[in-house]
Length: 335
Picture 1 (cartoon, rainbow, N blue to C red):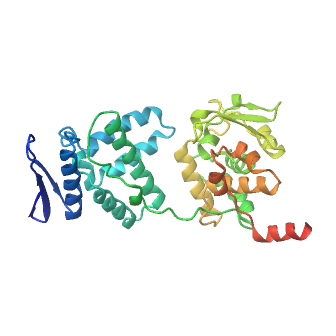
Picture 2: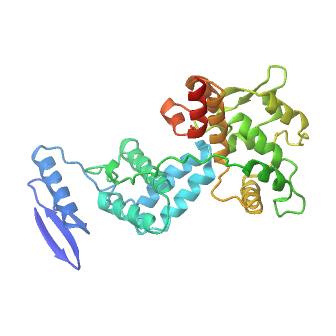
Picture 3: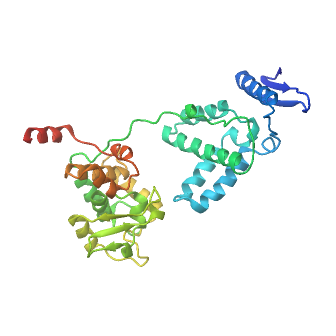
C-alpha cells in the first residue's frame, strides 16, 4: 500500500498480482489507511470485488432511486421529498458511492447540528441515506468495502418531551381557536378537533384523514386505516362519551372527512391559536400525550392504552406518559 498526499488529500494506491492498480483518494488519512488494509486483506484472501459501478454512481443517484420508491409507498411522501431536498444542499450529495466514508457522514451530522437542526431530524436524514445505500448494495449489486454510515455516527436524541396542558391553557385554547386562522373564513372545526384529540389520542395525520364511514356511533368505535397510521397497522379505537358528543355536533363535510382541513392550513392555524392564546412551547402532538396520560390516570392498563394509541411497543408508549407528581401524591395518600 502506497499513500501520497497532494493538496491536503490522501491518495491510496494498492498493487497486487493479477489486478490493475487500485486507487482511491480520501480527505482523512485514517480513512485511507483503513480502506487500504481492508482491500489488501481481501486481495490476499481472494475476496476482493470490483467497485467500478460504485465509483461511477453518486449518492444523489442512489437517493433519487430510493426516493422514487418511497414516494409510492411512504405514508408521508412530502416528508421524504423534503428530507431528500435538505440532503441535496450538502456537499456530500455529489460524492461517488465508493468514495463515501464514515467521516463524510460525521461531517454532515456536525454541520446539520451546527445549523440548528434537531438531533431527531438529523437521525432521520442519516437513516434515509443509510437505507438507500443498503438497498444499493444488497439489491442493486453495488459493492463497497464497508457501509459508510455507522450507528456511532448518529447523534443522541434529546430526552423525550413531557409537555402537557398547563393550568388555564385548555380554556385559552378554546377561547381563541375559532378566530385563529388568518383566512377569509375561520374553520368551524378547531375547537372540536382539540377536544376530539384529547379524547382519542389520534396522531395528526390520523385525525385529518378520519372519515365518517369509519365511525360507528352504534358500536361507539372508529376504525383507523393502516395507510394513515405511522405503524402501517389498522386499529379500532373506542370512543369516549365526550368524543361521541363532539362527533354528534360536527357538521358533515362534502369530502366525507370528519375534520376537512389541509395539513398546511392546520399548522398555520395552530400556530396562530397558540400565539393569540399566549401559549408557548405547545405542539399539537402534545395533545396526544395529554390524552394518553389521561387514559393512564383513568386506570387503563399499558396494553389497553396501547390498543388505543397504536404504539407498536410498550417501550415507545412509555415515552408519552407523563404523571404529575402532585396527582400521584394524592393517589398515594388515598391508598
